[in-house]
Amino acid sequence: MNVTVIAGTLSSAPALRTLASGTVLAQLQVTTRTPEEPARSVPVALADPPAWLERLEAGDEVVVLGAVQRRFFRAGGVTASRVEVSAERVARAGDRRARRRLVESAGARLAALGAD
Image 1 (cartoon, rainbow, N blue to C red):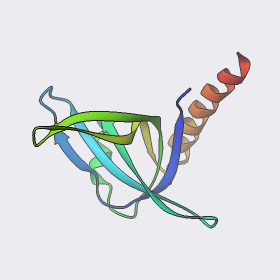
Image 2: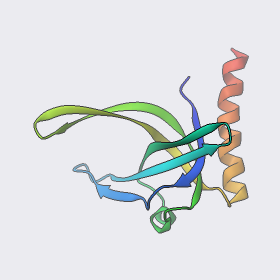
Image 3: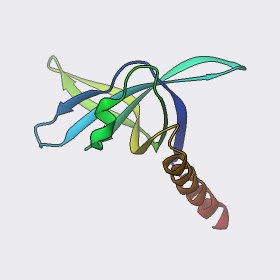
């Protein structure tokens, strides 16, 4: 099972771009910090993001539900790859309802794993 939940702050504003397919891709850099570990920057990609995501800025706190993936692409005639979190859902950390739904969804998936 590939379930990832990340809570942290945005290192920069979301970068939005439109792919050749017409899909809008938002790329985020989420920095996580704990007292026990150094800060870590996690790249996150979200396809067809909600409109409110465009208004986020560096320093805003978010919670992300998704899966870790390795994406391959062509750059300068060479095949390259990137490991990132493919987000299914992003919530503002201050939005209690959205945050709770996101965490409950992740918990339900993990509970289903234990039920097998």
